[in-house]
Image (cartoon, rainbow, N blue to C red; front, side, top):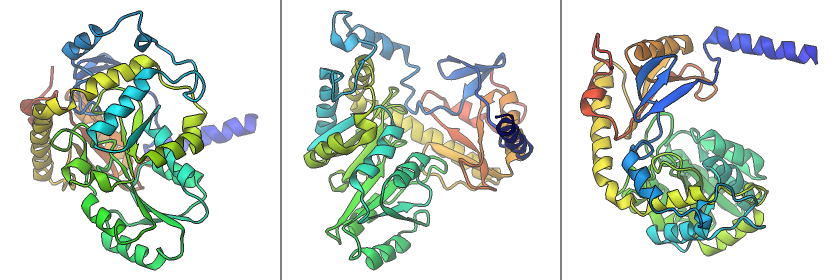
Length: 390
């Protein structure tokens, strides 16, 4: 045992030397600001993209809808949904999601991680080929690894390569599943879903899996994500999203056909063998979903903030591939990235370094994650000299 502990200590020391050691921060939250080590800073690392989680008026409005006598007020489901943990509000959320997306069905999960590690192993077998973008999220990679499918990771957003792979392999497998994010979480760039749909429609055995975790709420005319924006919702077989980012709640969903939903209920291990989220969480989720179309002003403001920060980054000599509210400042060296983060924090901006293994070696970056609660002046001040947010 002592030898194992020593090995762990050696590995952690090596991480420190490379500037890649992590520890959990102690954070106090106050609206769009955070307090860390007695320093108050503007939060530039939040996934609260629409500013809903910090909206006190919204919380108060929701609280007035609650009754302590209602099952929706319960703080625990106490069981999996297949036993005694299937409350009415879960079905209400799923029915409302299906209506929003004009789809046959939907199924909710405890988290985006639960969704991504569970769906692919459930629907993929040894006669399945998964073609996944090189930069898909770790949860999708884990789901692929848990499946029995063969996987080829095509170069990031390289649709010519993807077309070649489909042409070569489509006759050799019972089914092929194309896997992508819509907005990629580290670079903020966006998949061409329309083109992927066109590829899929050329072959009868190809399915499309799209993770909209960073797009739901903030993209599309009514906030339904990049699939709405690119007008291809109905052609995506597994349209996955989370409630824990722009929608300010917790959990995840897949919009799909009735058959796929029933199949997942019977085959998806991360759905079957877990206690369901508390009913009160889904009550809040439903409350927010019903207001989603009304947040266009917030979405428009977020687009303006993003354009401003991208322009400022490029002016400073940091080319930015992002077309979204996630904007990387690519620095490269992990230790230098940590120093940049510390400099920004001293100025009053809580921006965090992203380092390997989250991103490949040599691509460490500051990842700015904007929310509509910010102002143009606040974003413009990030790189202004001698400016301290108070």
